[in-house]
Length: 185
Image (cartoon, rainbow, N blue to C red; front, side, top):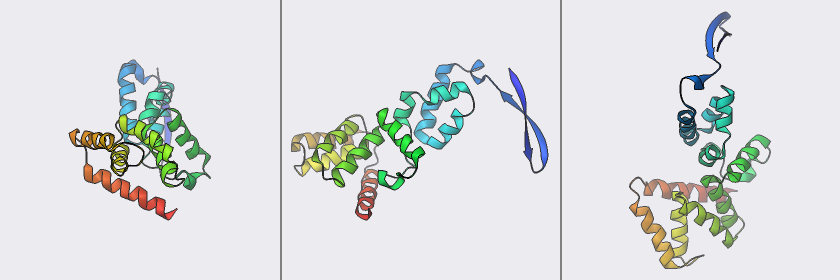
């Protein structure tokens, strides 16, 4: 069950214990919940954790984990990382698993860069599922008469006010940053 591995640190060989079966002590469901939490915090930490053992690798590659994985460290504009196949694959996998941030980014890009008003449907999907920037933007665009009725837009904006943990200033600032980045590219 346990195996010994050696690491060379500063020219000295050190022995450490490696558990081949971490799930022997903790139920798989608990590990899965840990994976979901880690996925929301840092994709890099999730990938490190997935490399620990076969169980973690399997859990890290479930659609539920990819649906919640943090895309924070990756650029908003897909054209900025086209050269990196690993990052492109990461973003495509997030989109395939219906990650809200991936859906929102794709719709945001199509709406603002390509002028595709139909992309608002993707923003509505993300907004309805709880993506705050999407809900805020759908509400504002709707109040301007773009893509929906003003009543629907007002409902989106009111739903934001009813959330206890919404950071309205943070949401506005994040949208401003995204819009500034769109102006640059």
